[in-house]
Image (cartoon, rainbow, N blue to C red; front, side, top):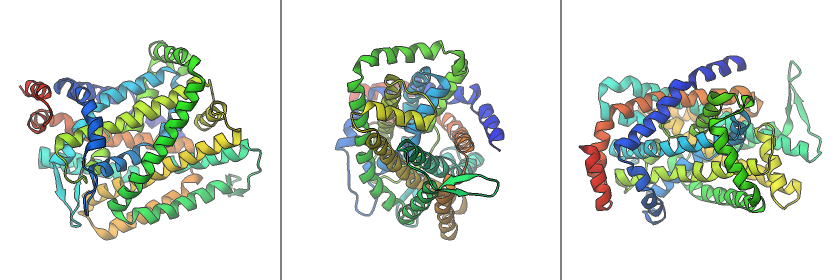
Length: 469
């Protein structure tokens, strides 16, 4: 099964899909006359000065935190380390490039999420690709909407939302116990396979905590995310900045290796295709631009215009990729750590922080635990939203889905890491295909709506008017 998933992953994540994602981002950036880049400073200001609390609803800031909770996960740390191991330092360059082109995709997804949305039976807004594909393109595009909903519900159960996160945390916990020289109690399965008891308990604890949050719906997920995301993100960035300050002399050489490795990769990195694939796929896994997941959370925001929500959606890439992933990659390069994702990340923190080894590793595991938990609860909302689009909001099926979701979290540590990451990448690709295809078909309307909705200053109005013509 592992070998089959890996072969299928290599086939799907080839040049066609890479060209589709990067090409669509570049095409939209050109059609919008670089408006997403020019408006990025305003997007940051809007994040801190925009509306906050909405009685009985979800604020734009809460919607953004929900989106960030699902995107900032173990992929930002362990995934970056894996990408550098597979593709070399140059993978970081292609990861950043995918984020730059992803700005336009994020903006467009945010605009569509608010322009095409509908009120649910609970009085909250609901939307995302399942809604804006049909409303924007009509009934002829219903197969695309259905395909996205199916793959989104599947990805929540079998991809990014559960197995990857819990599996990574349990692996980190096992590595921490091993590094500290402690003996691990193991559970022996039939066939001789051994599972550390700590990993099994991690899945059970996560399952219980997840159930306490996800059955409260988007309101509870948003409230928890609004508290945890700023805390965990700020603490992690502070640790990375501390390490880079101590290794400031190695930063120029690290940046040079990134640029050189992007265009002249070594054979050990898998050549140019291996470097580009590792960087772009890990970048997409991180910021999720084009996957269509962020619009599901963005659609729930109250009191926001399509243009403002598009700009707010772009800030997720700023924090997720430009800050967290970039600093993670630089920390790994300046500390010159090697190995698989888990061991490389733990070694980098142990070597970089001026703290006892056990304290440094425990701090990293604690932050990764928070990363994983917020991703798990964020993806539960994505999965149920996709299921509601398929079933018309059937409450029985939604409850059953959440029960299966929490049980999946409990058994995630028992699964193979290789197969889990391959399945997650496949789910990302299958979600991106219908979403990006629909966005390309709606490009003319997107440009016209951007010119109408933009409420910023005159220069940007002129840019969008020129793009509309």
